[in-house]
Image 1 (cartoon, rainbow, N blue to C red):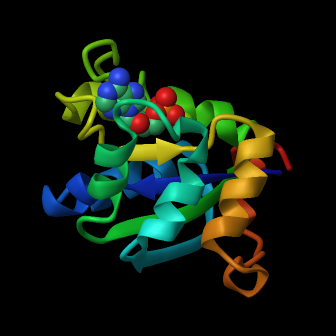
Image 2: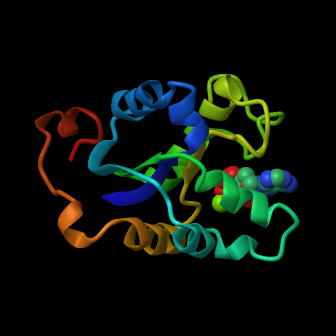
Image 3: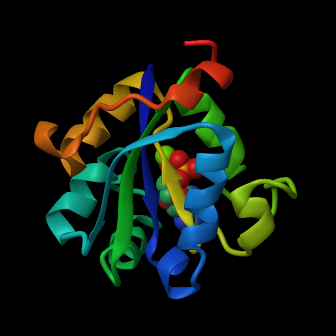
Length: 150
Ligand code: DAT
Ligand code: MG
């Protein structure tokens, strides 16, 4: 089963949207295998977003993600990365379709509510930045066979 890292950014918690967003992933059929509330350090933020270093929005992005707590979670299912990205919607809420998380709740690209890994390589790298192995719990959910046949 594929795993992906989801971050509910500071605006999610400040706006009281975290339960709603977690619920969408649960209802879709993802299994939550790791979850925690954390205040992201500047170091972790810069490492996590290192691909954007040097871009005009980088400093503001780091300031935003470190400004207030986030919820980090690892969720798992078949094709988890692409399914989660589709549920999130486009990076800029202007382009995000209604029915997606950013399409339903977002207005601004800076305050776009949620992060999700964009590839298998990113998912592996990002999961290991936010979680150690002991924090990821493998368990079975019998309902899984009614979601994916597994
Ligand atoms: P995504 O979060 O959809 O993977 P990304 O990796 O391109 O998008 O960018 C990371 C974050 O940086 C994004 O969620 C919000 C911010 N960002 C991206 N493009 C931006 C821009 N043009 N202006 C301001 N912030 C931007
Ligand atoms: Mg990205």
